[in-house]
Image 1 (tube, rainbow, N blue to C red):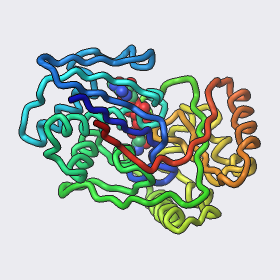
Image 2 (image 1 turned 45 degrees about the horizontal axis):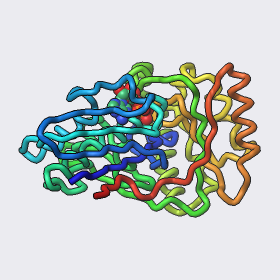
Image 3 (image 1 turned 45 degrees about the vertical axis):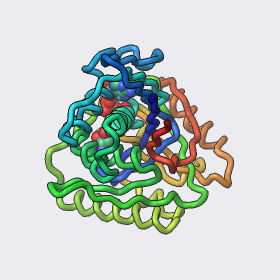
Image 4 (image 1 turned 180 degrees about the vertical axis):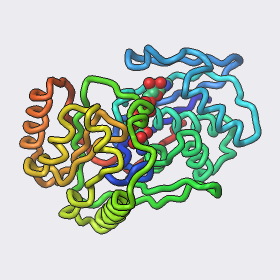
Length: 300
Ligand SMILES: Nc1ncnc2c1ncn2[C@@H]1O[C@H](COP(=O)(O)OP(=O)(O)OP(=O)(O)O)[C@@H](O)[C@H]1O
Ligand SMILES: N[C@@H](CCO)C(=O)O
């Protein structure tokens, strides 16, 4: 019996919540599984043309992670993969592929893993839970990973909170964007980061949209990554003047995320972001989204 798994994109960090905070964005990676006598892996669409059409594919590898955690072997199947999530742009394409694959593998095995275990397998594979947790659970999730498990709180998005993303037309791999980060930080930077991350989670939990732009300040990763993303510094400093409630580098970039109030038109923010792109010599897309609340879904 064929089944389909749909996992959403995500935006990690939200400024100071490095490796620990993220939200779910309604662009989807879809994995369609049909049990059959031999395994076939079929990436569909131009965006996945560069990904392996065999068992080396990241989605298939993720399916085997579910089997390994369950202590079973994966039955053969035809696995078709499609995505709306732009690759290597800071919108969690690898997390969507990973979560969709683990959930698909679990489903193919008859569901031996519960949601907490699926999340833990995904977070351990990615190394941090900030994309995989919202991809699996939807909404806004704050999470941490330790030797005992992946611990999280899922927040229902505050009323009137919408997302505007600027997605540049160039790729930036997470590994490259992590390589520019320092190995150590001063106590002042640590205190700045934890106080802002804590304030941000409190502001999101209480719907304090007025606090977002203050709480989203970050020196842990954005400062170091700014040279890789033309226009980022300007947007972080100025987007609030054009209607953004706060701004951050999305994941490892190069996408930039702004929060907006859904009661107000976003045309001035779009015009500003298009202007930054033009001044920075970039092309790309500016799009508005609600925050996805469903997370990963299985349909039979
Ligand atoms: N649907 C998919 N099928 C196979 N491989 C995929 C799929 N989606 C993503 N990938 C792999 O993940 C890589 C992108 O991962 P990377 O961590 O660099 O960026 P990202 O996840 O899009 O962004 P970020 O982690 O910053 O949010 C792609 O180059 C590809 O190798
Ligand atoms: N927290 C991660 C997200 C991208 O995987 C980073 O910023 O490197």
